Length: 252
Image 1 (cartoon, rainbow, N blue to C red):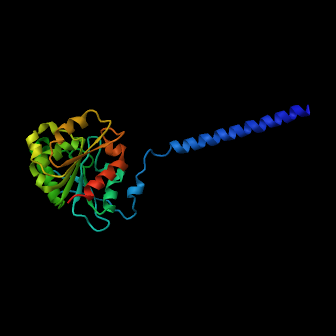
Image 2: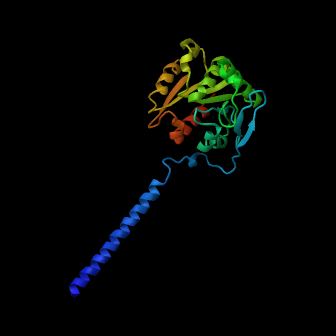
Image 3: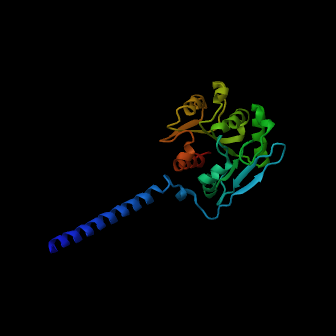
């Protein structure tokens, strides 16, 4: 009987130990899974970055978010457009505005007409109107050395502006933009603006379609973000930020 009692006590301690290890494993697994897949805070977080907000003047007022250089200002200013499912707030959530401020850039993120805090505009219904609208916004905000970042849908604004006013741009960063098929090879060849073409490896529709046309830009480089889809800058923000900063830092 004493032997049986010892065995019973041993089994109880053994089961308790196994149960404890199991609970510890589940706790560690939960903590590991609850972390976000990718952190970018080491790149951009700074307690002194202030994000300003405002609305441009005129018949088609555009809401914008703006950051000023935290340190000595760089020559170029970054203008961030957005895709169909996003707005200027996206660039704040990603930390792009904060990062650019920290690195010495003035940066402005726009809400395109009909998105975010910007009302729809008749002017945006034509290609000429969209180019003029973007030109007027840059004038109102006194942007003189713009680098235009244009993902997806915003190609409807960025590309006609690029074709008509590319001499105003210091750089162009298309991210699988729409409407590239609306322009000829000759039109792309005429644009001398330094261009960084970005796309996600897993974007098998719009990326290759836009890349076929954008490759005709004479002064371009191409970067493919691995394991990322159409909104590659959102899925791989760390990689996107590093590539963008490298491009900006090396502009003449």
